[in-house]
Length: 150
Image (spheres, rainbow, N blue to C red):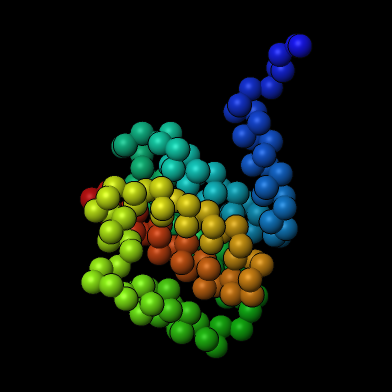
């Protein structure tokens, strides 16, 4: 049997490209989304050197803020403040004595969890009917990772 000439990186790129196309967002949205998702994926895989981590996460934050701006213009923002309040420490995250995010930090799982959450919220923000809320959640996890670097 002949060995395939396609390496793992090429497969990752093909899969990633197909995944982004499946999200069905507009061209400007797609560019912003692609940038944020590629950067957070590189960060999650540990492919960003320590000196560049904060710079990369701040770029992800910038891309998410731009997506939020686009969504605010696209949908009625009459409930915008409710969305912001619901994304930062909602009551159902504090049932025990600590938040899950604090436990994850204690067990050194924050990077993977937050990176996965960012990707999750960016992937579905156009599909649940709560775009700004999901983008705000992605932003919160990005800002949390930035704070962990200091």
